[in-house]
Image 1: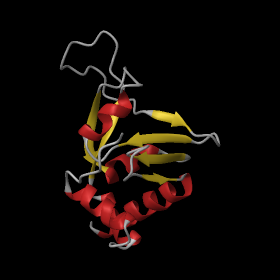
Image 2 (image 1 turned 60 degrees about the vertical axis):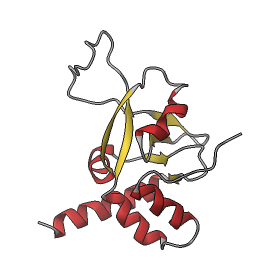
Image 3 (image 1 turned 30 degrees about the horizontal axis):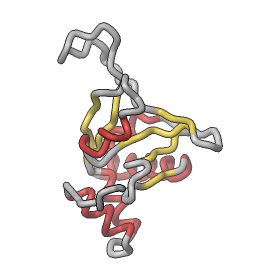
Length: 143
């Protein structure tokens, strides 16, 4: 039996509030852009422990039932542990702002945050494209 979801950080508190209707979804999405997420990355073969030779990270991408590529992200590294048991080459990851991820994600990719958990969110490719656009507008306006 799953344990009840207890928020461990501000992002999780806001995610719960948004899903319970206590925080406007547009406000949540704007806050999500500046929030840190955990992105699992594939471990390099023959890696010296604690030393990353490559300058590019290979994030966890899955295929949805409708054929879309889905990037898997989590609200914290702790949330990823159970899910990643099925993906043993993804033992490490990056903790970074969602806006940074969006700047590098490319088009045609959906996002699943905390997949399979009570408090998670799935963003289809159109929503991700809108967030990429919103992020670039916000970045441009802040310069």
